[in-house]
Image 1: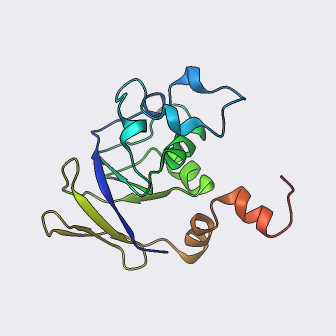
Image 2: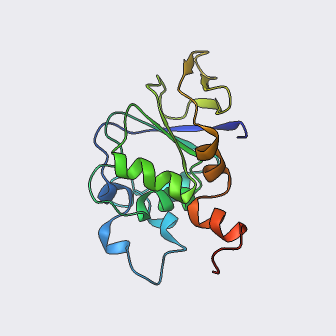
Image 3: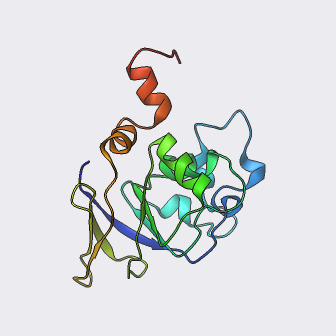
Length: 164
């Protein structure tokens, strides 16, 4: 996987899927525009201010709540390259991999706006703003392949087993 360099967006513990993408924004005619609603109720500035390649740094149990795939999809569409959290709700973790969003379980000391460099193949996160280095367990090759392919459906389409 390629190195990721981005600005940190700091979130706390127990960020649920309704905070990530409000339920009323889950209509069938906007699935390609979910990113403009990311964190719309809890951080209204997020969708307009987030830049391609930015990184969410959070506490425990990120993505708890409903099991909808829309939450990681909205983050990806908003430009988020990776979510780093101390822990994830299991269904959010799996849904993220399915849609091609890199999620890393690791406790990282970072403040809002810090510059981070993530090297997935080395299992490291460097906080460029503080010089602190953090290590995480690398993904097995088949999971890396899914994420690099853009998710499960993108991988299936590339193999020619599913039409769009």
